[in-house]
Length: 262
Image (cartoon, rainbow, N blue to C red; front, top):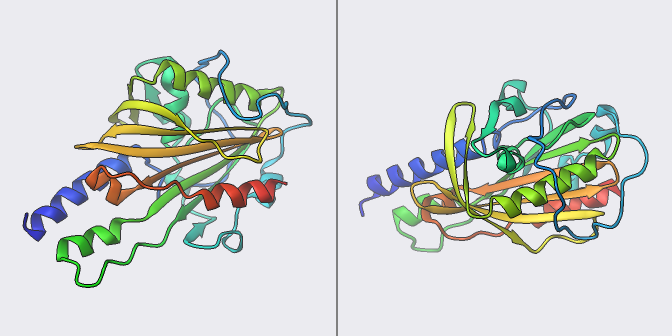
């Protein structure tokens, strides 16, 4: 395949992946609003026996425990980005209401109606091409990095636990795939699979969503709860979206955020 063809294919697949994670390059801090789709029910998550206590954190309090550049060992963390790049929950819909929580998660939003939210974005460092790599491989190397949206949402009245339940139920009911639309762009998830969740949270959920991006491409996400705060972290790798190959979720982001939440 000629270089130009490789570039066109890779860029097309990357654009499709970006459409699925529409806030990969932006975000903002604001009061949370929206509708979780009320998937309801119970689900599986690590350490699910611990319940939230206390009131929801305010936006100012969330900002204090949200990540800053000094908290991460690699990549670039963005704290302030244009509000226009923060897709509202109302801009995300699912053909099956039970799958709405997954659609919110994968599009960089949140589940339920939090009292406050704060958002960050993170972009990893591109892989270095091997010595003597072809032009095609060099180009793909520039895409071989993870980008993640980090949303902290704090809830009143058991909303944090309910958000986790809704997500777990959504994974169970939508494991065979579903369709959803983000600001007018329709996407198809072919399957959803739970993966090993991180430790150190009151509850945690990790999953891989296989999406149709011209080929079967994995997109990953981790959600953790500490008290009344839930952290949503979907992550995409554009090289993976171009090739369909697997990639590692950037666990350092979760580790750093859990450490800061205390």
